[in-house]
Length: 158
Image 1: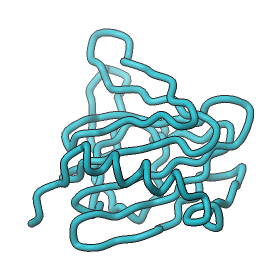
Image 2: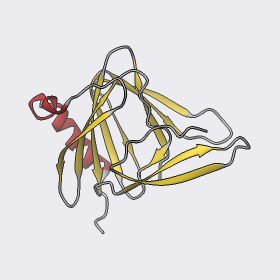
Image 3: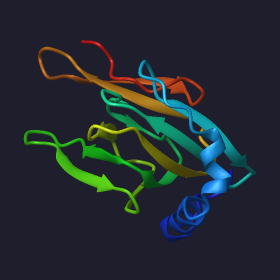
């Protein structure tokens, strides 16, 4: 298995794609019911996705299993929350032109932010195969559900 590309390399990839709207704009499709994600490119080491967001869209808490990631906001804004136990989740607002990186072991969620549609560019290395979705039972027990990368991430109903 290929080792993940370093975060700086993934960040350079998403920045370059975001800087060229002719590459990603044809893949933007805003849908109020669900996030839309379109594959821009994939090789053995890295895959790049264009994700369209609308108000109310939320991935739920998840991990990328063995894949590192970089995400840049091309239009609009998102919020990212990192799972924290026994305290408030670590949250940040990411506006157009800003980016974040995610290590394979990180558990986070991404939510649309603001009143207008958003577009993000995501690079994963190695390409996503499986992810983990997380839910918390009434007693606070955390449970991981494995899913194929082709399935849309959504919050798990408790």
